Amino acid sequence: MNILAELKERFRRALAESAGDPTDLLELVRRAQDAKFGDYQANMAMPLGKRSGRPPRNVAVEMVRRLDLDDLCREPEIAGPGFINLRLKDEWLAGQLSAAVNDPRLGVAETAAPRTFVIDYSAPNVAKPMHVGHIRSTVIGDAICRVLRFLGHRVVSDNHIGDWGTQFGMILFGYKHFLDAAAYKSNPVEELARLYRKVRAMMDERPELNDAVLAETAKLHAGDAENRRLWEEFLPHCEDEIERVYRRLDVKFDHTLGESFYEDRLAALVERLRRQDIATESDGALCIFIEGQKTPMIVRKSDGAFLYGTTDLATLEYRMAQWRPDAILYVVDHRQSLHFKQLFAAAKMLGYDDVELQHVSFGAVLGGDGRPFKTRSGDTVGLEGLLDEAVRRALEIVSANDDAKPDGPELDPQQRRQIAETVGIAALKYADLAQNRTSDYVFSYDKMLAMTGNTATYMQYAYARARSIFARGNVDVEPLRNSGAAIRLDSPAERALGLELLRFSEALDLTAADYRPNQLTSYLFELANRYSTFFEQCHVLRAETDELRRSRLLLCDLTARTIRKGLELLGISVAEKM
Ligand code: ARG
Image 1 (spheres, rainbow, N blue to C red):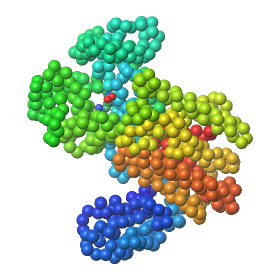
Image 2: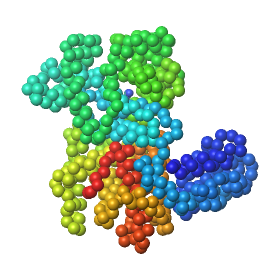
Image 3: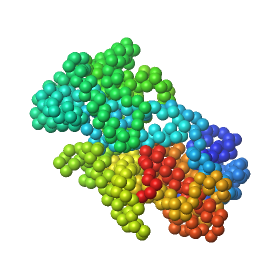
Image 4: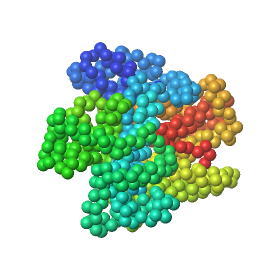
C-alpha cells in the first residue's frame, strides 16, 4: 500500500467536480514536515482559493467535507490559512502492518501499469582494466533494474560494452611488438592489461605512435584477417576480466551486446539516413543537423569511419525492434550529455517518438583533494584494488567489533572474512548509491565504513541487531508471523516506526519516478533511525505483557525484513550475524 498515492487518489476524487487537471494540485499532498501537525498535509486550498477568489480556509472546509477519508484518517484539521492536516488512524496503520507481516512483498503492491524498460549500464571499454569511474554506472544501473523489476515492470538489462574501439588497436600493437608469450599463455588477462598500459604510456611519450596504433584499429575495422583473428582471441579474455568484477559486485546482465555486435549494420543505417535526408553531407562528413543545436551529430567521417553515435543509433533501432520498450535508460557519465541529446533528437527524426529516452546521468568520483580520484602516482585507481582495500578495512572493523562483544567473540576467522567481504563491497556500493546521482562525491573509506550515519555498515548492523533479538529470546519467527497476533502502536516510538515501515512502497515509487536510488537509501536510513529510537524506548523481550511482546517482536521482524529487502534492491547483501 502506497499511502501517499492512496491519499492523492482520495483528493483526486474530491477535486473531480472542480474543473481542470488536478495533477499539479495533487503534488501538494505531502508528507508532513513536522509530526506535530500530523502524518500528511495537503496545501491545495491556497492556490485553489487564489484561482476562485475565495478565502482559502473556506475552500479547505469544503474540501474536507467532500473528502472520503473515514476509513484511513481521523477527522482532518484545518490550520493557518488553510492547511489540511491528516493523521492516519492507529487501527488502520496496525491493520496495514499486520497485512505487511504476512506478505512476502512486505506490503508493496506491483504496479498496475507495467512498462518495458531497456537499461543500458556499466558498459566499460574492455581491454583496459576497470577503474573507479566504472563503479557509478554499474551500481546505479543495477539498483534501478532491481527496483523496477520488483515493482512489476519488465526489465531488459543490456551491457553495451566498448569492444571495438581504439583500445583494441593498442593491444594489437602491443601484442605484435612487446608480447611476453609465456606470460600470455599463463595469464592472458594480465598480459593484455600490461600491454595496454605499456602502449598507453608509450603513446603519451611518443605521440608519433598514435598513427601506428590507429592503423591497427583501422585494419581491424576493415576486416584484416590477422587483426580480426587476434581480436576474437582477445575478447573472451577481456570478458573474463569484467565478469570477475561483476561476480564480486553481484551484478548480472540479461544481454551483453557490445559495439562490435552492430558493426555490420552501420553502413546500411547511414545509407538510409542519407536517403531519407535525415543526414546530409558537410565537409565530406555525413551529419545530422539538429534543430537548436550548434554541433551536428556526425554519423560518418570523411575517411568513411563510423562513430560512437552511429553505433548508438543502430543499437537503439535494434532494441526497439527486439524488445519494443516503453523506455530506454542510459546510465552514463554526465559528460556524455551532448551525445545523448543528439542521439535522442536523431531517434525522433527516425520516427521513434513514443519511447521515453532518458540519459540517467551522474557526476564524478573525487579524491580527498576534490579532483578526480587518482592513486598517489597519478594513475586512475583500479576497481579491483578498490574492492580489496574496502574488504581489508572491513575485516578490521568486523574483528574489532567481534572482539569487543560482552560475552567474547562469536565469529571464527572464516566467518569474519566472509562478513568482511559483504561489508566491504556493500560500503562501496552504498556510498555511491546514497549520493544524489547528479552530484560529484568524494571517495572516502573512513566515511563509507563508518558505524554511524547513512552507511551500509550502519544498516547491516541494524539488521543483524534486529535479527539477534529472535536468537536471544529463543523466538521462532514463522509461527509468530502466522499467529495473527495484533500490532499495537500505543507509544509514539512504536507508531513512528510503524508509519515508516508502511512508507516502503512510497520510497520505491520515488526511486523509480526519477531513477534515483538515493531515495531508497534515505528511506532506509530514516527507518533504521526510527527503529533505534523504538529500541531505546520500548522493551521488546521484556515487554510488560505477552501481547505487547508479540507486537513488538513483529515490528522488529518487519523492520529487519524491510531493511533486508531494501538493501537487496540496492544490490547489497546482509549478514545474519555480525
Ligand atoms: N563505453 C562507453 C564509455 O565507456 C559507455 C557506453 C554507454 N552506453 C551507450 N549506449 N552509449 O564511455
